[in-house]
Amino acid sequence: MTTVTIALSDERSSKLKELATSFGVSSEELVRVSIEELLAQPEKAFKQATDYVLRKNADLYRRLV
Image (cartoon, rainbow, N blue to C red; front, side, top):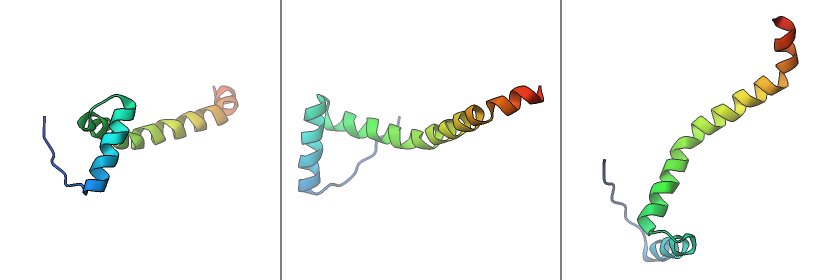
């Protein structure tokens, strides 16, 4: 596992702590989960696009078989 250190302004750090508290997690956990979600977005977008194409063309695919 890799550790990453970032610099935040006092204002941003306070906002992060407030958000983390509202979700009932630590600031570190909120940042980790947020980064994981960000990194997973391309996969989600691709899955959504393929699901849309498959649904849209389902009848066509049945007729081709």
